[in-house]
Image 1 (cartoon, rainbow, N blue to C red):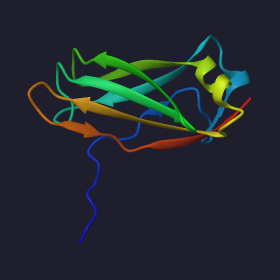
Image 2 (image 1 turned 180 degrees about the vertical axis):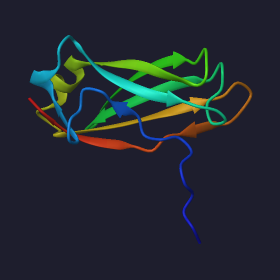
Image 3 (image 1 turned 180 degrees about the horizontal axis):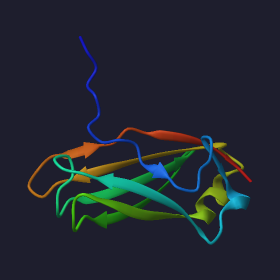
Image 4 (image 1 turned 90 degrees about the vertical axis):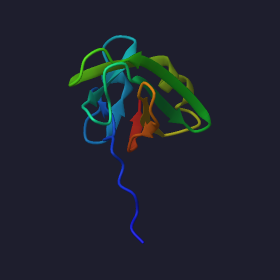
Length: 116
């Protein structure tokens, strides 16, 4: 039996370097995440929902795709990571894409070490 391959690639955390998210190096008050929107998995009108998890805490950001192919830029509050750094040293990012009139797909996950 073979495992099912995810259609959607993991999100790209623009502020990460070598699988590490260094909060003191982030300029501004948010972490930038890019999602590459390409058909057929993502189409015009698809609803993208980014999930970010540290320990038991979870945050999310949403966007509607207006044009494909494109790069969707979403932001996660820097304070989310600062508030949860004491209880968790890593963050997991993934997203879902819900196409108009179609099924919802879940992306691969990326796990980053979070440091101050």
